[in-house]
Length: 73
Image (cartoon, rainbow, N blue to C red; front, side, top):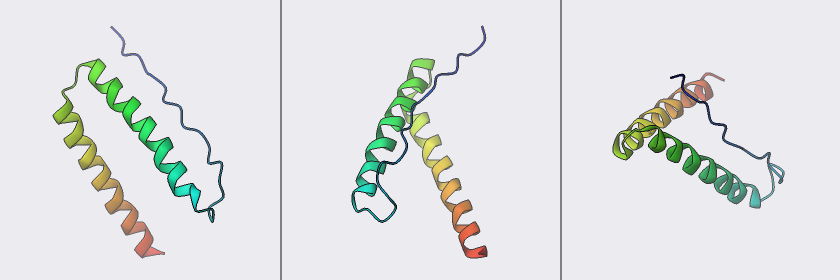
């Protein structure tokens, strides 16, 4: 059986970079997408603790890579 690929909707920012509400908007948008993603992994059969630990590892790797790019500029 071929895996199905679900699509998670991410809306574009409605506030400019300098708008104080942008951070709130970003958190709301990403929190919904994150919950949808986690739900999809659980429905697919992955266990919640393994999903949480793997997402933390992926996020850590991403932050470290971003930090490396920032220091190179």
